[in-house]
Every structure is written in structure tokens, then in C-alpha cells.
Length: 330
Image (tube, rainbow, N blue to C red):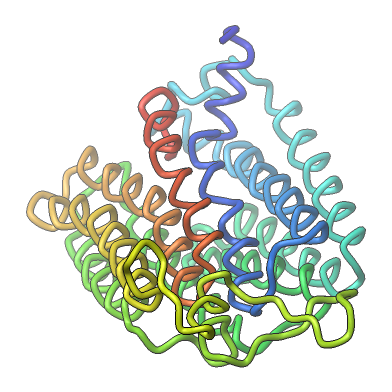
């Protein structure tokens, strides 16, 4: 990778980029809908707005980073502040344009998301409202996927959005201490939260209105009477099995395995940070929380009954881990 591209990859934290598509895909699954063209637009919008937030974050923190993290692209002089700000503005405009192409409701959600991102980076980050603002942004990102796919905000998507927001709140709270360390309470709360969310997503009872509860929603534009169901649910309805294993058992196994992967990814580094809240271990806890986004999104999709989406997201886990070794997600 050329040095200039590497500098921008570091600024934009591209290793964390793989945690973004799962928001929209999990949102579509929670709304009992399969991904469609509008879901793809929501994913593109989410990616743009996420990277806009990364560029804006480092632009806003350039003076602070000059003291605490002088190796970062802006304070080290590898990326000009004006270029970072221009990138943030351009990516925000692109993200909003993509969302509006998915429909006016999706555009409104994306506008709220963009506003939250800019408010967090420019004002709220260093206030008590910082973690809540970041949590709201991640919840809105999931709702963007649900809204774009179905054309409206689906009530069943609110609980998965809240779960993703709760995880984000915990990770953001830990990140506020990653340069100085010394705080035990945030990683302890993140550890407890990861265990609680893992137990919630591993439960067999699906979200109200999800694919697995028998109340499937029609796809927009589908023929009259057409529904969007998971293949497993359709097979189960005919009393068949898959590979000799009852579909319900396979679905349960996938959901529990993904929930366990989420807990393992998020809880282990948080536990180490509790034992020793040094800056390096606190930073690892933040990195672990970011990487845990993907198995959490996959587990939420599986809990909603969409095994295809869950499998696709699970496939991103090793890719994100490999890239994180080259470019730090924090």
C-alpha cells in the first residue's frame, strides 16, 4: 500500500469499516425483510457517514492528539487538517445522497444520524453526553437499514437498535480513558454489559415480529401474498430437516454460537482492563469492543431468524481481525 493511502487508511480506521455493513443488514433482518437494493443504499450511506465521522474526529482532536498521540496522521503532518475536514464534509454529503435515494424516510434517519455524528465529534465527545450520543448514532444506523429496506421504521427494530446502542455506549465509555488509563469502572461495566447482551441474544424467543416468530412481512413490491421468510423457517413449516438436523436446532446452535463469539470478543479484553487499567490494555478493550460489533450484529440477525444474513456477517469476522493487525481500529 502506498504511503499516502496508508496514511488515509489509518486516519479513516479502515479496519473498523467492516463493523458498519452489519448495522443495515441486522436492521433489515429485524424488520422481517430480506436485503434489497435499498438495503445496499443504506449500507453505502452508513459507510460514508462512518468514515466522515472518523475524519472529523481526528480533525476535531488534532490539538489533543498532538500531545497524547502525535503519531496520528494529522499531528504527524501526514494528512493536512483541511483535507481531513473536506473529506468529512464530502463523505457526509455522499452518505445523505445515498440514503435519500433509498426513500424519504431513510433520508430523514440518515440526516439524524449525520447530525448526531457531527454533534458528537465537534461538541459532545468530551461531555457527559458523549457515550449516549455515540450509542444513538449506532442505533440510528441499524434503524437506517430497517427503514431503507421496508420504507418505514419497524417497531421490532427498536429492541435490536437499543442492544447495539448499549454495546456502543459501553465501548465509548471505555474509550474516554484509553490514552491515560486508570479507570476500572468503565471496562467492568462493559464486561457486565457484554455478558448480559450475550445472554439476551442467545435466547430462543425471537424479537416481536421477527422472521422466526411466524409473522412474516410482505416484501415491498412482491406479488400479492408473497412473504419474505428465511429458508429455514420455510423448511421447518414443511416439517423437514437440513442435513439430518432439525432446522430449529441448527438455528438455535447458530444463534448461541454467535452470541458466545460476541461475548468472547468483547469480554476478554475488558476483563484484562479491569485487572490492569493501563493505557495499552484499555486500548485493547476498546479494540475488542469494536471488533465485537460484527458477531453482535450477526447474533441479532440470527435471533431475528435470518441465518443467511448472520452467516454473511460472520464471514467478515476473520477479515476484520486480519486487517486490524495492519491498521488499528482505534
